[in-house]
Image (cartoon, rainbow, N blue to C red; front, side, top):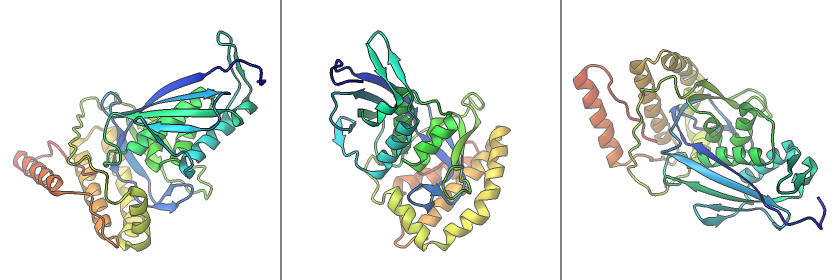
Length: 312
């Protein structure tokens, strides 16, 4: 790749959906590597409804890496973005496009800068896992551009370093994030439990009770909870391991009653852990409480769960 070559632009576009946890991830045992204190399970939503779309371009004419989110330029200097860029660049391979006259050696990717444009079709930082969709999409699209050969499990491990829940958005269907045991995080990655066709009559309704940005970010909230909540340790060590197994069975058997009961119980405990944090964290509002009350009354009147609510 010489200085006299034409100033070409190579582009790739990808789309990743957001996900909703049914067994929650809350709390890190390693902040830098984003390693969780427990396993978690989520359902990936329909990308036509809730997703991030990202286009990445590389060119020898770009003097620096730049990124735009929903049309507004944002800083790429953050450690999480840089981790994803660094890990994908390390795995980049040769790329050749004869029609455009482009030939990139794998070592050239360290010198090539990228421009990234990402768009969410839903509110950002409002509790709908926008960072999960965005970072999963970033990693997937960078990998596509740079001809990375890693499988989805390895890509999920890279996405995790950008945003914990992002590792689960690499896959569709129901996904488990295995917390792993290794100090370097090499075994902390997502696995697909079942694909999106497994439970195709399951309907998910998203009720946005507020599009405002959360008062307490997930990152700072988790840090405070790990430092101050005794309930979190009990949850991670005693409650979640058995709940994960029961949830896997409920999903495998499409057992909605067990699935609903477990999801609601885990959501309630997550919010209890937030209240057990000092200072306490409030993610629900009056509308959230009214929806929960309505769901409980509906299910009680029917005798069996017809619907469940998961405030996020």
